[in-house]
Amino acid sequence: MKWVVFGYAGVINFPPPEHAGALLPQTVDVAPERFWPAYWEDRRAYDLGAVDARHFWAGVCARLGRTADPDLLEVLSALDLKAWTHLNPDTLALVKELARRNVPLALLSNTPVELARLIDGRPWARLFRHRFFSADLRRVKPDPQAFRQMCERLGARPGDLLLVDGRRENVAAAEAVGIESVLFTDALRLRSDLARTPAAGAAR
Image (cartoon, rainbow, N blue to C red; front, top):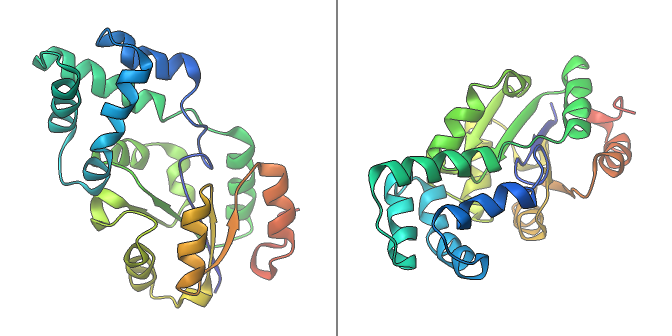
């Protein structure tokens, strides 16, 4: 059985659109060029589940010299979650086709726990028989152990998987552990790539 494993960011969803991303620095009244380095500095710990949303955003505010009152932390967390939920309808259409053809699908995403639970509650998430999130695995791509843990939980060998991911470093890391991988650029190209894969070739 060949599993097709999708990444989330930049594959199932679009990167945060400009208007959504602009709301975060505006909320703390700092320029984007100051905000984003402070945002990404500790994002890995958030994706790992080492800190929750409150602690992550308190850290961002501290780095920006802003007072992190509870209401502000709640607003920032809500805006951040919304920014990462702009779905790619073309990718979802392809996922639905694969599911209808009984191609076994899984999701592997670098995602903090709050976003993971939000995704779990969405109807489209049920298209994936298994969903793996970094905050639950306590591993983030491109850590090879993230891919190995996924294989163990699926009861599959690396050669039984095909990864679709939007980041070159994740594709390279998966291939290094023996997982066939496709770099996602757009749904049309992915459809063509999958057509050459026996397990998913019916999605044309």
